[in-house]
Length: 81
Image (cartoon, rainbow, N blue to C red; front, top):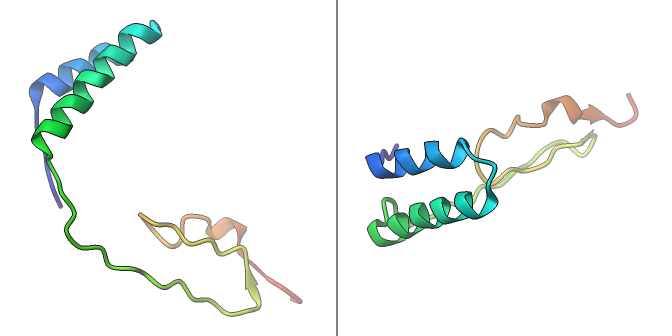
């Protein structure tokens, strides 16, 4: 697990969430992006592909790139049962 702390980014995030002014929010998020680009808090050097497999009778299974394979388990059902 990676952790990145930047107090100024936290201030800009809170300011952006307090306003409905799109121009102001945009400027704040650009500041955040600039810091993240300059400091590169996380750089992925390796990516492990995952294989999602299920029984052919089970439909509704949708792979997800990040997170749990069970994210849409409520949509799963068996065909012909």
